[in-house]
Length: 335
Figure 1 (cartoon, one colour):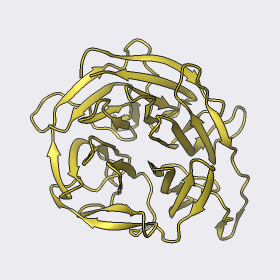
Figure 2 (cartoon, rainbow, N blue to C red):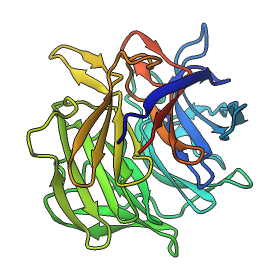
Figure 3 (tube, rainbow, N blue to C red):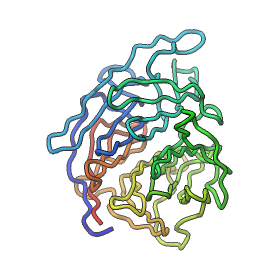
Figure 4 (cartoon, rainbow, N blue to C red):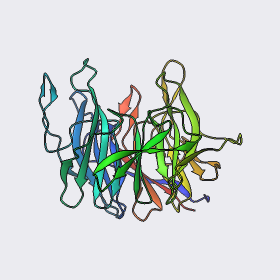
């Protein structure tokens, strides 16, 4: 990456502050954002299932296309509707004219622990209608996972993916297990992933079930389905963290990682630094936490390609136990 890197601008959404949403960009550079925890002013935090869109352009504004559904909770859980239900920590990817949403966590009533979901939904981006796929996620209920479109193949990576990944089968309208070889990531959640090029998925960071965070990175070749470990040369790299966000490196050949939260042993320390990782395993620190125009430190935000691909869009997120954000920031990283 060259020296042309900066946080360019910020603008609010028309919806409440939110964290833990899922977002994906379509071929035109439009970002589609779904669900998460929303914190309306003077109201308790609530998990939602609304749908928002931001089109690229000089006068872009967020549009709320679908408002949250008021879904009642009974003894057997939430009532099934013709829309994906409220959730956070889910994963999504756009393929063609559809946005696929996989699993997630529905906290339901406070103190219950809620439910981890295994459902798969498809959103028709032209009609903005939802359809529930007949087959659930094959490995069971999952949250805090990742999904990416890699050269036309949607790949899902969960904490169970030690010797396989999940791949979307468009003919069956379902996920299938794809065996993998090589050196895979350890079991983890709250990690990030991006398509580095037309055949390579990169995974970084996250946390194990015991809460220990990591800062290792791995590349998966989606033609041979072989993993390899990246960036073990001892050079500077991001700190161990979870809940970061990531997107393809503009121009291809790698991944951008920003934000996330570190562990200080007794709590979470949010970050706002920006890093680039190439498919060759080279890390470069692009911007510090206090760079001009930088967003407030946060985790559980989203990062998506915006417009023609020279810019990335950061939306929302959470400063642990302090505040939830409703702002959007544009990151320019030219190569």
